[in-house]
Image (cartoon, rainbow, N blue to C red; front, side, top):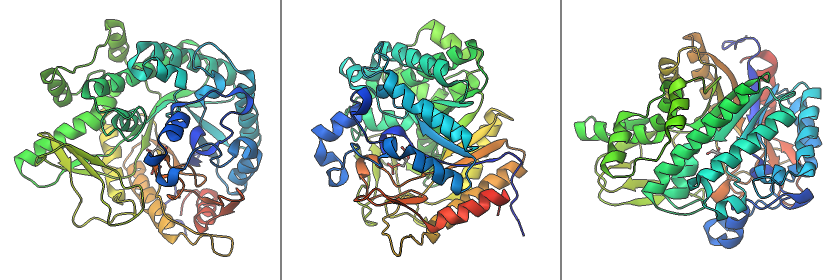
Length: 467
Ligand code: BG6
């Protein structure tokens, strides 16, 4: 008996990114990315000094991985293209061998009835561009559009769903505020400029795609963590509104409404860090038509208090339950734990009902806009027993979030697909390899893949188009 039946053609997929699974970091002319350099130069910043050099060896094992995707009933797959494989220095030096890899991969996915949803930028910035100012330098936006256009020319006959940038908010935050990811800086002015340059890069790439009249749709994958006030005091309500404006609305409102949100704009003007943006780029936002769909990456909500006496950042990278995450900006807001919340071992709250609220919010900003859940999942410390992992808590996690999505669809919200993070256990950035997210367990010594209990469960869900 199916209680939660999903619409016809709903996409049941999973997600990965190039750097986190491919390995083969210098094969076939690939250039270095900022993450390769960062892991080499700062091993102490990555849990157990892990590197993405081998990752899941997907570059060599892609046919095996596509076979698993097919065998386990997925009809969609979200992945990213590695920019330094296509242009090793990020700019004009096109690398045919790197481009061929994706050509073979797309052909193979389609032959197996799997629709690719392809992200152009999932944080692996070519090192050469980083050496020249990275995303602070407007030349990087030009290079991104050049790279995107090349990908559209090469693959748009086969790829029908494109996402420009993965999580501009999270990558800016960690690159330029918490200093946990490359380029490891704390510089609010640079942060606001980089966040905005990502949006301009999206707008110009989307415009380029539309002007090429290729079939297919283009969107972006935004990490959206709704911010609630920690208490009902006016101070905490204001703190939550400000944090939401900075982390969420800065990205969603400019793309969906053509305007930067008021609260963050006021703060940036007051602090003298409002970003430079040309009139022609501002026109792109105001003219709209920048999103054929929106990708939503949802993991957890935040709770903000105005009691922020210091500036301090910390992410749990150990999977030790007692280690909390910390985010506090002196005088503005601090995120606190939900005293009644249920948390993962990496201190991320599990709260599926927030996904329904979030989808309602997006619908109110852009009624009817197609939405894909481009990421949602749970990271765990897992070991293999008798060739599998009994990950009932992952099943519970995914099922409860799918119920929230089903509720949203029943309320008329146009959710078209779900990509569980992740297909495979992979390189979890500064968490190294301990934090496992996959439907498939990857043995780090042999690189063999083993389906977890959740992979079997998800196959049934996909086959029945519900549960
Ligand atoms: C998202 C990213 O932020 O969350 C993924 O798009 C990432 O690349 C996922 O792996 C989970 O985060 P983490 O840091 O636990 O791997």
